[in-house]
Length: 73
Image (cartoon, rainbow, N blue to C red; front, top):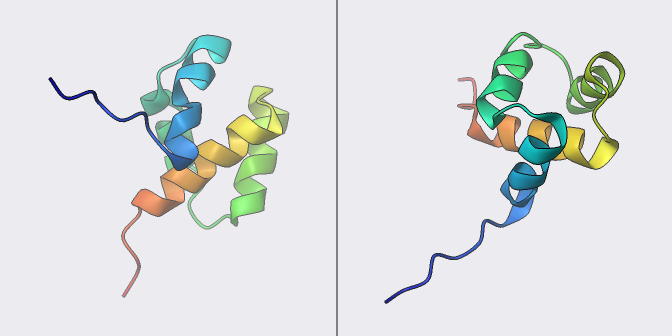
């Protein structure tokens, strides 16, 4: 029997984010979709001020979101 490895990096915050704020990660990804064109820190600031997320949680969501985006060519 192999044990599943716990997530690393920003995704390691996901269980805590879902428990703390009561929304699935997809909810936050949809919100971040509406912030196209903003910098990493502008996105973090928006999550903190408009949605009352803590800095670490906001930063983890943005880092994960941005890592999933295809680089523009």
